[in-house]
Image 1 (spheres, helix red, strand yellow):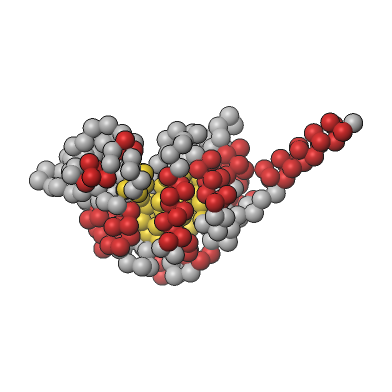
Image 2: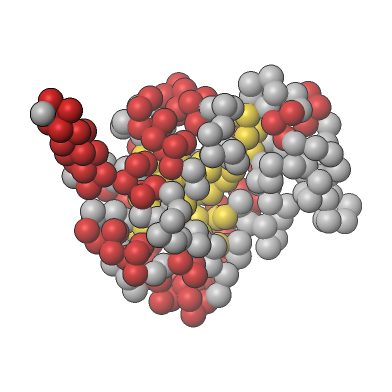
Length: 279
């Protein structure tokens, strides 16, 4: 009998954990910005992605938010770079996480841009280079589901140290990353990246209820029944990525649950839905 009662209690607790959770109130993100226009990795249609000049270009184009990607170096520094490996956008070789900061700082992060030489920036260099009013989305680049790297915990420390809770979102495909953020600091805004969801994926819907995110960040092709349903049931705003077509931008801008759009083409984004900033 005791075993049955304990089993029932565990099941009840799991049911409560998975379905009766409440996201944080994210309205402060929109207090000065009624709608968020994110430069996705800065403005990669016009400048080398995830570089300071790319972020500055996005702001110059009129964006009020920046999406960027963060890795932890071998010697414990937070750097801004997208891929887990260096080859696509730099002249380096191998995993970002296996390099020291000194090794990364000598690389050119503008491969494919003739005559350009840009450095891989530290996260604090990016923050320092942009206005204090900018909203940030830091994507946690832990690619292993049960990663031991704990980049997200360093990001929590960074946000606390710089007093940025009201203007930073930590996002990840990995619900365990978000769960660890919540365990470390439940006041930090988190977002689950929603991509190719299926009933057998931690990303949908089980990952949502494990992570308890405050926002949903769906890929543009995955703004589907599942994302829309949970957004409305839990009153969770959505920021959609990565939208580079004007008509699609206009369509998403009409959805009251979509509070922001991320784009590679920041000029097109601002020209198309920049009027949302005036409402």
